[in-house]
Length: 133
Image 1: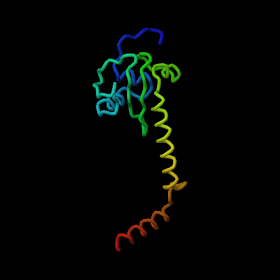
Image 2: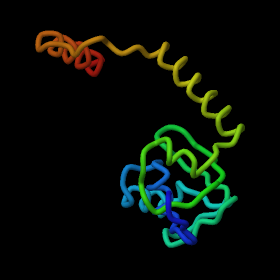
Image 3: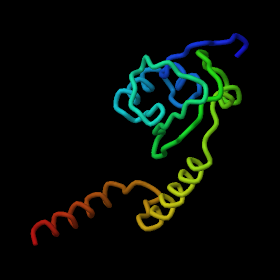
Image 4: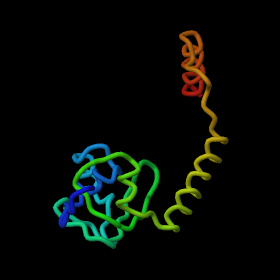
């Protein structure tokens, strides 16, 4: 971030801030409406301004960040985290949804390992016997 950048497109900024792995993923997220700039849908060519509020979906979570700096280059995480500041409400909401997902996982446990061939056959027999009722 040695050079001063005056204008950055939103897809480049999201990529440089390390929210998405590639610019094409950032572009897709913008076009499908999963990224809001000041609470409005925008095009990928939108110029980012310092102080703007960006709401984006990242995995299962929704994040709301305030733009603090501009950059066109993708750097390490520490330098990229200087570009934005996540709001307190966003952090609280992410923690709340993460806790809900964790509690939901307790009610639908997954087996430690895949069933072997014999176990799969038994499961299919069981499923088929319910279908015949």
